[in-house]
Length: 208
Image 1 (tube, rainbow, N blue to C red):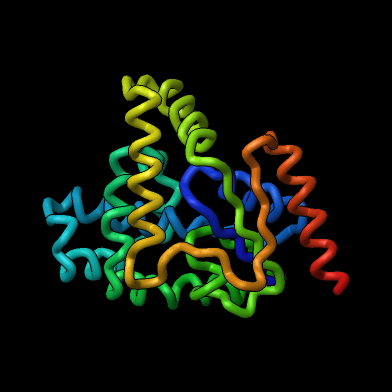
Image 2 (image 1 turned 60 degrees about the horizontal axis):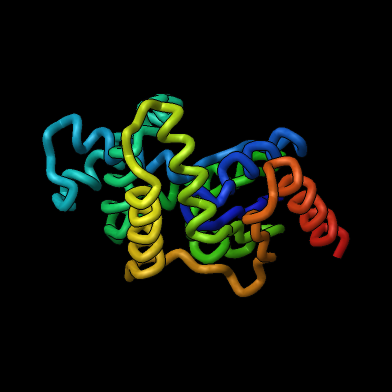
């Protein structure tokens, strides 16, 4: 079974996908970590983010064991990942890894921006998780505050809007809700409520 969880930044899809995987005993992959890891390696080696050759080379030599690096969650790495994510050659280089991961038994929960549309278009269940830009900015702002980041809410909201525009506007695998994906708006939900709603959607889809 493959469960595709898509959605914009700070919608709660990552936390939700991880909880679903644990609940169902499935493998879990945050595909955003792949792009963040590539961005980290590109910057660490002094390459430019618009150097396609370097970006693809880092993707092809990516060490999957490094995906647990806590530094991948730093705001700067996330922004860098968003900037390279539109490179078609990079997406192609990472596609094979993602699809092989999805094929692991007994199944996988995978979250990202294009899982239900490109990576796993035949997924058993597809959920598009979203929330208003303001609520997503509030969540990200609190995360950054907890890490000692001095960014303001207004700056965080603008970053969210800019990232949404990049993700939805790129030519290669833009972020969009798959035609057969269920919509889950988490604006007014805490993680437990979102989890209960998602599990309900999954059970309904499987029973069909």
